Image (cartoon, rainbow, N blue to C red; front, side):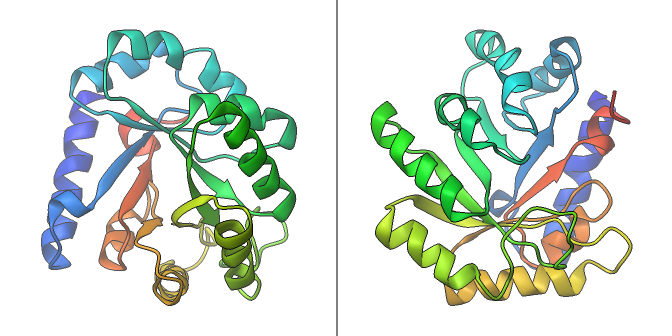
Length: 218
């Protein structure tokens, strides 16, 4: 696994140079969903500190203990968030990347005030308009960002997307960047194990890589 991590890091470095960008502008989010602590520890030992998890309850079962052993860990929630899990998510995660509907945004805003903790939020955009995927429609995203920022006072830092699996991701990454630019957002979470180099070329500031680091999901 550690050799896989080094390969991913080198690929990111190459893609960044080819895109004429600075390496420090790209954050690698190591996706540790379904992976037990004993598989995550070697990656932590290699200096990786930013991780992505899909499920709140699963993350709560392993990360509090790991954080007592490794400092400066940042956790990103990259899976769908149910309203009844918002409090635990706000307590546990540094970034919630899957804000995609007003009801959820209102719950995050309310519980963040109650917990006196401000999570960074990314708006998830359904760039391919796929019925089976979460995310707000591209035509509705500007109004939703305005709601989150101005009415709810959420800390909206960026956008996230998962493009259609069977198509060239480039136009979808480009669409997300265009939305970010017109809304004055700096951060773009896009690109996974199969397309993170393309995502960097298109302007990603973070890439979510799991399989290429940890191997196939358990």
